[in-house]
Amino acid sequence: MRAGPSQEDIRRHNLGALLRHVHLGGPISRAELTAKMGLNRSTIMALTSDLTAAGLVREELPRETGRAGRPSLVVRPESARVYVFAFDVGPDRLAVARVGLGGVILDRRETVRDRDRFDLDEVAGLLAGFARQMRRKTRADTVCVGAAAAVSGGVRKGDGVVRFGPNLKAEEVPFGEELGRRLGLGLPVSVGNDANLAALAEHSRGVGAAVRDLIYLHGDVGIGGGIIAGGHLLGGHEGYGGEVGHMVVNPGGRACGCGSHGCLEAEVGERALLESAGRVSSGRHGRDAVRTVVDAADRGDIVAQEGLSRVGDWLGLGVANLVNIFNPEMVIFGGILREIYLGSAAQVRSQLTLHAMAPQRERLRLRTSALGDSATLVGAAELAFAHVLADPLEVLARANA
Image (tube, rainbow, N blue to C red; front, side, top):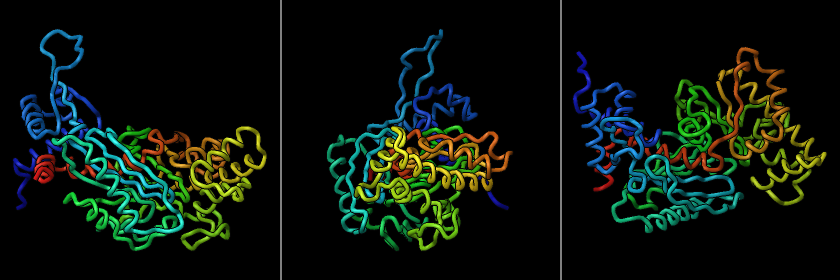
């Protein structure tokens, strides 16, 4: 006969659940926590006291009550004291942020990256160097409780190895292990696909915060996707789920870095737009180059308009396929796809009307990322905080040690 959860298991679960409310929702009163968690007031008081003693939260009187009687104490995350490092490794940029409990970006560094090669020593060294700079600026009582990286590529969930990253020029790279060694914090570095983590970020803190079924599409050089179904990320058997950029929408079309032809990434990504708009010869690339095309189209440039329209048609067809399969409530466009969608919304919606089944598209909402260029960093931070939210006191004790 299987034994039920012990009192310690229940306490650990409740501590994590309460901290999650504070972490994701911000300052909240004890009374609201009592209602949300379905626990009695004395239990909530005991849990908040434990978390306060550990330095994870603080309790204070509300600034304004407007009510008679004794006010309920407000529980706030100790954002300045407890933090994680979040890293973003993209085709043409490297970024690091120190993110406090509660999702507050406390410090940030960013630099360009040579998109034509991937040198693990160089990349890990730069990122670790930025993190050390930020750590030297922190107070003596601060504590780092985790680290995680968002990487533009397929990441094996078991060990954080980047199995494939055609736009990074990386393959079979033990990225998490090497970055953890360079950081020297005694903490493992979790690694996830950038689009998957950005999807989690938009689901927890962005435009999709109240949505249980959504698809996030992320564009840089290529196209990635993250799928939230029933409130959970669809990661796939080994962590490679969500590679929607390699869904074939135009058989026999443009060559793709994955070795196939006509992938959504090949027809909609940065190079496809610049070629369609006659801008490849300019030598510019990246997000600024994409924005230049969209701005030119807005100003009446016919070639830019035609290029943007062509890319918008392929994007709409890809979205229609995803909508038919997953029936999301919302599709979110992030990275360079934010600008591409805003400049080609008519084409995207037209393709949805033509190719998506009516029941799936009738209540579909199309939105752009609320977190913008920070979505991948915010997602990496949430991945790093996952251990703390699962077992707050144990993780903090280990970090302090």
